[in-house]
Length: 236
Image (tube, rainbow, N blue to C red; front, side, top):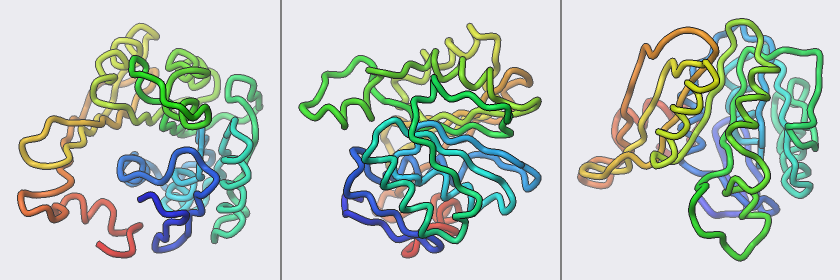
């Protein structure tokens, strides 16, 4: 998925100016994250191309979605993707650091595909580093923001590498929150999970743990993956 654009069923992502391109993992997060039709406000922290905001705009017909992005190039690209979409009247791009974002609004859902790979070696490109590593934005920051901006009963959806998930689970508990649902993403049979999408909040308990196998032994997409992504992927 490294083209300068990616065409979905109901919207198009232009991504040539974004450090992080559309990924299968992010698409899984956008399609799997539990939503309700009566959600009024959604916050996307670190929107990048705007992918998650657009997927949620498609899934939740009446929600207003605020998308935060600190990188100027990505913010411009996401704003253009929003403007070209069928839901441009419900999508608002804010070029700002999420830690400095203040509003009277409270959100029914906060979604974040945060910087990955806390302990891995840095690459040569600063913008890609910033998008993939916890250089400027920590998971503690994310939980503090969510605690401040979530509405009563609201939830936080987070996508992380499987190797980071145990630390995330401990951090969530340290803050007095609970993991409510998790999805382990498994690339192919015999592989270990490489990503985990989790839904958490200040109340509740772990009610559902799922696995998603992307491809079967023949290399074809599994029925579960197809059913999850069919509303979005053109060719599946």
